[in-house]
Image (cartoon, rainbow, N blue to C red; front, top):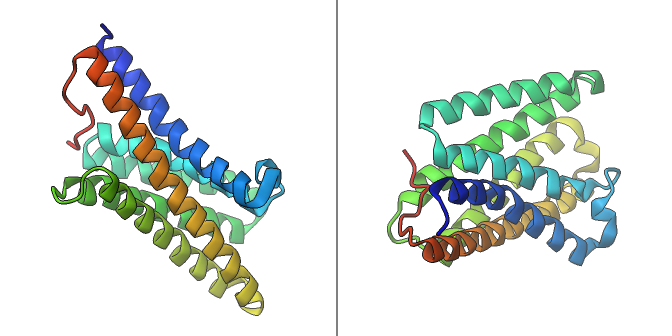
Length: 196
């Protein structure tokens, strides 16, 4: 028998690792090993998935107020960390973080509560919301900072958004299935992450 603490640890690890591994794996399948290089634009797949995994964990475990406060603090901290790179990168970082906080909130707190969306349907909806959120924020950045390179940048963000959306949706589906298996083996029937 596994303890509740063991299940919480497994949930935390799987919530962060599953979407990260799925996003990076999908990126490697489509774009090769360059996805693993920090110089590659597609390196964002793993970074974004890691951030989203942490945000999803916080959204599942914490109250709405605490989650939003932590998301705001994390956005500011990452924005301050980017100051040396210039105001454009600071704005880019804060916009993307604010978008991820909003998208995670919608997925966990709104879509996660819809009884009609369960299992794979829920994760398809999550994929769409993740992808649209990233594409819209990318379009804003292109309009503000790369209007002369719109077509190539939009193609890049379209690819990144699809890979991110599909990778995260698949990652959270895998995570939920693995957690369900762990809970079944330990005799814990509760989902353990119902939003507060």
